[in-house]
Image (cartoon, rainbow, N blue to C red; front, side, top):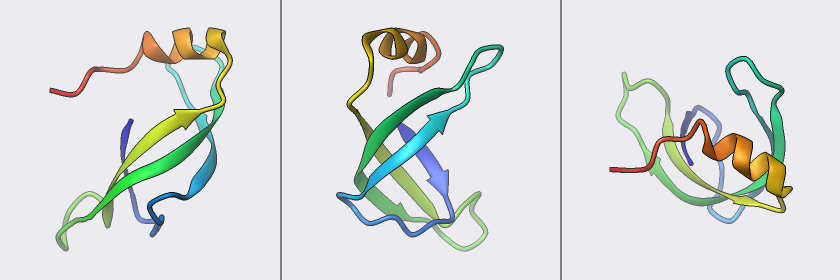
Length: 72
């Protein structure tokens, strides 16, 4: 999953996150930072970050997958 953030997250960091879904309960999961790109001043955020989901229940995987858009 790709996200924009102002937090300086180190590659390899593990995060406990809640993914907010429209019209549904949030999905709580662990994610690991797999890449980070510094963005230019004036961008929507300071960093563009790639996350890999870890330790998720199968039902949460299904719910999350129904809202995610594949990378182009």
